Amino acid sequence: MADSSDSVSIDIETISLGGKEHLIETRQGAISVAVYGDQDKPALITYPDLALNYMSCFQGLFFCPEACSLLLHNFCIYHISPPGHELGAATSTPHDPLLSADDLADQIVEVLNFFRLDAVMCMGVTAGAYILTLFAMKYRQRVLGLILVSPLCKAPSWTEWLYNKVLLNLVYYYGMCGVVKELLLKRYFSKEVRGCSQVPESDIVLACRRLLDERQSLNVWRFLEAMNERPDITEGLRMLQCRSLIFVGDSSPFHSEAVHMTSKLDRRYSALVEVQSCGSIVTEEQPHAMLIPLEYFLMGYGMYRPPKCSVSPRSPLSPLCISPELLSPESMGLKLKPIKTRMS
Image 1 (cartoon, one colour):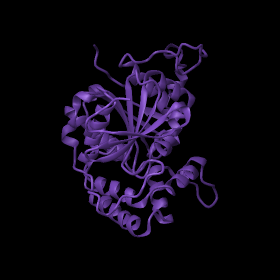
Image 2 (cartoon, one colour):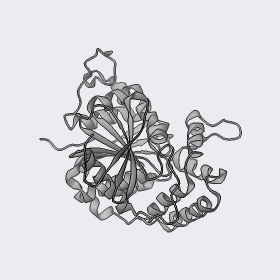
Image 3 (cartoon, one colour):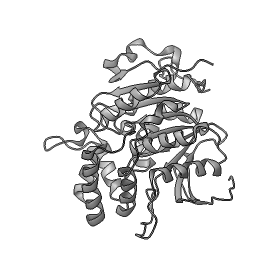
Image 4 (tube, helix red, strand yellow):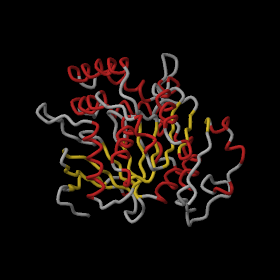
């Protein structure tokens, strides 16, 4: 494993699919990174939303066989969890310094330095998308591209700020109680999968609810506090030097924010994919909707390489064999705008 004068890696456990989790000490505190795949390949780093980690935010996408094949064929995956959000995390103490959004972005560059990574691809969801976008603005040469799911870029509106303050008080005084979990699930998922009195919750919501039970409430409080004090980064978006692909569910409470962010990015190098009947966490609720846009996005980098093993001629991993009807918004459940990339 790579060495660094500022970071120390502690192996926690070996997990499924050949992944291994490391706890890396940075100047801003410890941060957990789970590594999957061949470390000789280009790096894709992920960052989840509030109160989630990579298991509860990205496993739907990576358990989708076609997407897993596409991503692991081209990348080594480095799943970064927000401080204190990893499996088995200890609770923070009230005396630990609060980290800002800038601090969280600075932690990422230390992770890259520890693993001796140069420029990386980034994938983040909502709060995680904000952190990775801020990281891309501060360290432009370290980012190849951004894949953002229901991202944020503006400072909280008064409505969001007050809503978050209520949530902060609930988390601080009552922990991960039933009300907190319901508010978080509304943040993540559409009404269709959350169910109602007549319709039971879907499996992904039930699984997420169980994972929320494992979160340390004070750690969640600290991450939410950082996001509720986040600065507006809209003005810096046009200065980004990488391509961006944005996904958002049309039922996401952050839909308008994602559309606003897309309008501020350089339209020559960015695209918006709106997923119908979906909430914020497209990676869990409708991961199949991400596959074809991801293929085309990666092909723009010349990263697309068909697997050596034989595949069906109808496989979505074969770009020359994509059936035209699969690209229709009706069958994909998407509103897909063309992805324009810089020609070499």
